[in-house]
Length: 314
Image (cartoon, rainbow, N blue to C red; front, side):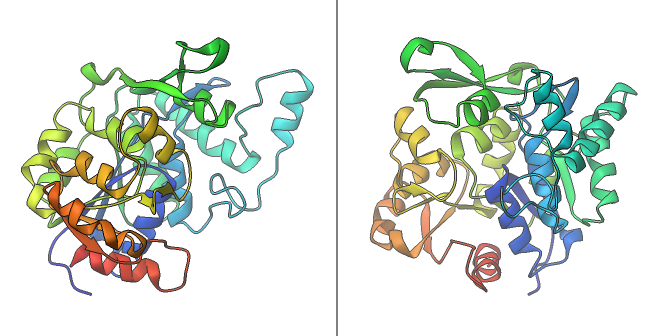
């Protein structure tokens, strides 16, 4: 299909990667920019790890591990096995091939390169064609307050909640450490302001999209182009397709339905694409001040991804 102008996607990890792959089925990669969450980033084993940036990169390169949904295909785990033998921290698995990415990123950052520069180098190496922009080059970390058991009231990093505790613990709060001092990455505000279409990907609204919006200037930039913006709901029939988005919505006082998603995104987007399973809630979505567009959104069946991309662009 023909789209006259650039398309910018506000992106988390797995859901955003699938949405970007869908868009690339119908428009050229050079038209697409992704503004990606870096609140999930962490420093581990002396390495700077950027899970969402890497999930997008590996997915669009056709190299994502299909068994895990993260990391690289045909992976081996000898480094982690050796680390475990020594009693090292091994709750966050890093495959042997994946380690190469983190080693390169950390080395370049140590040389004084910015995260945006390193990300551009990595995406060029994988020949992606799209522009992948970290929301900020400054340090931004999603912090989660736990609400259960002996750890109630304790604040941990997102990865300690999501991976180490397998997102099985209730939470009472989320904040974005460093957001008040962060600046939008180079090109981020232009990518939003100059886009023909802005897409809020079907990522977790609270811990994948909100960290991007927490960077000063980005939320205002999105509000200014609301009429050109469409969001895709990550909630289908009251549940998340992957991850804890539905539970987090409930635990933090939101409705875990497309209506709850509509309330969050109404100030930012003119349209919300909801799955056919939620067609009965379209009027309630509309009542929140955002127009419901009903279409298949589960991108696992052949043809659905490209069809969803066309709906989003049209």
